[in-house]
Image (cartoon, rainbow, N blue to C red; front, side, top):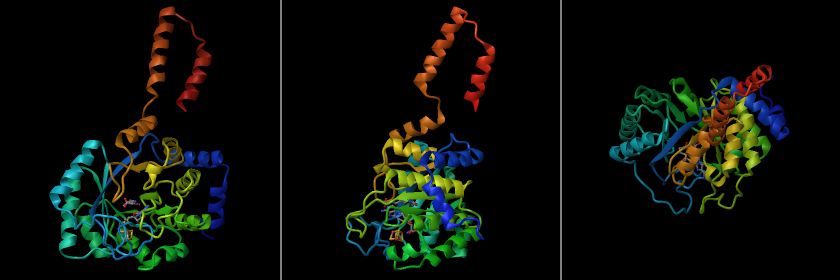
Length: 345
Ligand code: SAM
Ligand code: DTB
Ligand code: SF4
């Protein structure tokens, strides 16, 4: 019997929200420093005119989307974007290309140069270029690449309703090639395409059964784009994404769960609950690939909630300590020790 039964995964989804988040937090605390939220910047290095027909994607050539198509960008523009991301405090830089698959020759050679530029800024480097062979993955690894993003997006059954130009198994083949070349796998999915809870459970089961489990798991909320077949889909309910993130944290204890596309449509509070439920990375920067991302200043504020003590309360505590000292207030040391213990937990 598999370790991850669909019914069991769905039982997690269905738990009272507080219980689910409590379980996810326990797993999170055992595996990560909870203060650390990774900031990953994203850049589209080749935009639009993609031969695939992914129904959610503004870059597919099959749909009539208002989008400025761009050829593979030059190395100077790339370097400027990397330098800006580094200055803004990103730790990881991900480059995405609207390709069905990576072509040997010039494209591969330029991508290799791009990876070297990212690494020269001491950033984690990730690329997402469509299908790749093991040989190509090895060349990218040798150039210094850390991770390769290739999403499974949803369950195998629902996949057929979303994409007709490739199969789910082809996706798994690339993930396998990436893994065998010694690269870290980044693979996740999209919520809000009309999939059922069972589809979501099946997607998490497949991710959890990858050997090794993916280093990172982006959870995207569909950004409905005018001109794509999914343009009229409703934004996913915030509590649904929270449930998926918490369950992903439980099933993928050591993976970085990245709260990815669609974050702009969520309130600050929803984003904070997602981060409390086990997400520990966000896409950070003005843009995702073709759409706008959240404001960086607001993101920094959210991050500080997790990494620093609340500054106003801290100030009052300091003042109180000074006041108590001057009044020579004698404290009940037993009681204080107990409270101290609780605070340290
Ligand atoms: N062409 C490559 C591929 O498909 O792997 C790389 C780029 S593709 C745009 C990367 C990922 O972006 C997709 O796998 C999908 O999960 C996500 N994505 C694309 N359009 C999206 C949208 N409208 N809303 C949410 N996620 C989206
Ligand atoms: C991932 O899972 N999400 C990112 C990244 N990996 C490449 C892409 C999100 C794209 C959202 C729509 C857009 O901006 O075009
Ligand atoms: Fe092309 Fe990737 Fe968009 Fe699909 S998701 S249309 S493969 S760019």
